[in-house]
Length: 296
Image (cartoon, rainbow, N blue to C red; front, top):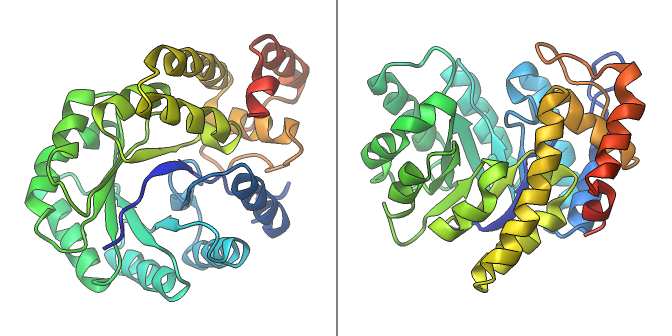
């Protein structure tokens, strides 16, 4: 199984004003991120609103990304679904389209440990030649170490996307295996700390517009320049905090619009960005030095 590392944007899925997939904008965003030096792309996760697209839409998004990326960068597609059969169908489709790996969140409603384990085992068995990285987010991440201990013997369980600030749990996951193991941090605000703790890389939302900042943070940590890395981390965190203040899912799309990449508004249940707040939001970004960060 291949291993993965580096800086991977959790790809935004651009939409038209009537909330349909926007293929042209999607390909523009992918090109932008490849040109910016992203090491890979993570498609249809929480940032990409994967659960809010139909099966056919999700297949189309995978196809468009793969057509645009070609073999320039590895792609991992999040295929999670409350319907196991749909997740398996999406995983097989992604494999047929040449993705480098598959990921899956714990589906809504799968709260019992045994059903979660059964879900991942059956999904892994359906694509035995493709790496599978479970995606632990929020409360589900708190038991991530124990879940992975139960799954780690499955040959194609290849790591995890771990989106939680619990670096103690994160380190235990990093140490579960020494080979064929890719442990991604998904918590943007702690990218530097996760790198210090042994992350393979970082998958995150704000990497859609400042991937160069996180790439530099990681390089600085790996070269032992922790103070410089933390200075950049704090600058990025101020941008993240502003996005959270304005409604994160809509705000990150507004940031992309300001960079010339109109991704539309998010699908419900995420609210739209308030039109009247656009000039104020842009002024606040300028005050934070965002546009200089975006040049990196």
